[in-house]
Image 1 (cartoon, rainbow, N blue to C red):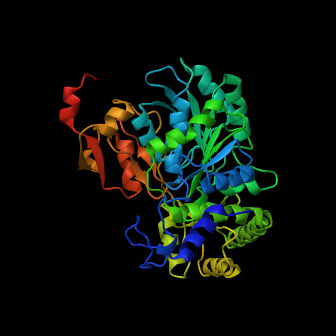
Image 2 (image 1 turned 180 degrees about the vertical axis):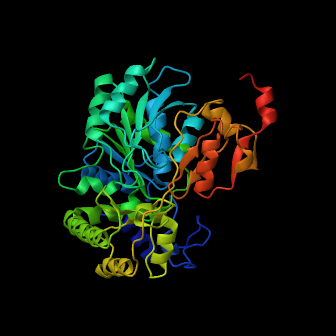
Image 3 (image 1 turned 120 degrees about the vertical axis):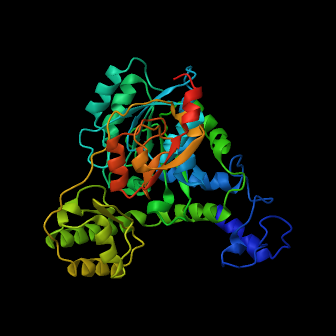
Amino acid sequence: MQTPIYDFVQNYIQSDDARFHMPGHKGVPFLGCEPGDITEIEGADVLYTPSGIIEQSEKNATMLFQTAHTFYSTEGSSLAIRAMLAMARETSDSRQPLVLAARNAHKAFVYACALLDLRVQWLYSDRAHHVCTGVITPCELRMALEKLNEMPMAVYVTSPDYLGNVCDIAGLSSVCDAYGIPLLVDNAHGAYLGFLEPSLHPIALGASLCCDSAHKTLPVLTGGAYLHVSKKAPEHYLKNARKYLSLFASTSPSYLILQSLDLCNAYLARGYRERLSECIRRVIDVKKHIAQRGFCMVDGEPLKIVIDAKKSGFEGTELAQLLRAQGVQCEFSDPDFLVLMATPENRTVDFERLKAAFNAITPREPLDGGVEPVRNPEIVLDLRRAVLAPSETVFVDDAVGRICASPTVACPPAVPIVISGERITEAHVRAMKYYGHKTIEVVKESFLTAQEL
C-alpha cells in the first residue's frame, strides 16, 4: 500500500530547500523529529480541504476500515466526538436537541454538548460498578427510548470502556435502526477491532458514526485518530464531516501525526491481522498466568489485562507501584482496578517481565470498600450554562449542595464523577475523595442568584 504523505515529506527533507515557512525551527533537529515537521506547503495538501496526498491516504484508510469514508484527526478522538455530535445535530429541528448517552462518557463529550447546546438524557447500566463502566444492553436502550417523550437526535455509547467492557453494538444498532436514530460510538480504545476475525469494529456492527484513537492501540503518534462514517449513514454526514471537523480543529495540523497515520495504513495492510492474533495469544497466556497466581482477572476486550485489585487484596494504585518497582508501567490504576494495555509492538521480553513481576507479588485477602456511581442526580443548570458560567474552586468537603461547573474526572479515563449543571451531594463527595480529588469547580452563587432557575 502506498504512503503518499510520508513519501512527500521524505522527498521534501531530501530536497534541502530553504524553509521560509512555518514552523519556526526550520527543520533543525532540536528534538530530532523537526525535519519531518512541516506545514501545509505547496504539494502537502490541506487536511480539511484535501485534493492530493491527504485525500489519497484517507482513501487507503477507508478501504482498510470498510467505511463510506475515514477522516483523519490530528487532535485525537476529542475532535472526532465534537464533529460526530455536530453532524447528528444538523438533522434536528429542535433548538436544543436531545442525545441519549451512556453515563460513562469522556469529558470531551460533555464539553461538546455544552458547545453545541445539547441536552443529555443519561443511560445507566444495572451492572455499572465503577465510574468508567456503562455497558448498556439493547433491552435497556429499548426501554429507555420507550419512556422518552421525544426522540433523541442520536444514541451515544462508549465501547470498549477503560476497563475493557464491550457493548453489544450490533444489538444496539438494531434498536436504533428500528427507531430511525443514528448510533454514535466512542471507540477510542478499539481501532484494532476491525482486524479481528470476524470484525468487531462498531462500523462493521452497524454504528452510523464512530471515532477511533489510532494512537491508543495502533503504531500511531499520540493525537492520531479517525472519524469513520458508515456506508449506511445519511449522505449529509459524509458531505459535512470535513466542515464540522474544521469547525473545531486547529488550522495547523501536525504533519508528524499525519505521516504516522499514513504509515499505519501500510502497516495494517501487511500482515497486521497475523501479528494481532499472535499478540492476543500472548495476552491470553499472560492472563492465565496472572490468574493462576491468584489474582482476580476481569474479562473484556482482547488487548487489555484488567485486574480487580480489591478482590486480589490490593488497591490498584499500590499494585501499580509494585509493578513499577520491577520495571513494568501500567496504563491506569485507581483504588479498585489495574489496567495494562498490550499491542503487537510489545516485545516477548515485555510479556516475560510482566509474568516475572506478578511472580514476585503474592495475592492477599480481598479488601472491602469502594463507591457506586451516583445515579439520577438533580440537574439544576443545563450543560451549556453550567460550563460557561462564572465559577470558583472549593474543597470537595465544602461542595455539598453546590452546582458543578467543570466536570470532575478520574484521570486518565476522564469520565466525570459529577457533571456540569448537577447538584453535588454527599455521595458525590465520597466518590471524589475516594478517587483522590481535593477540590472541584462550582458555579458561583452570585450567578445562580441572577438566573431564573
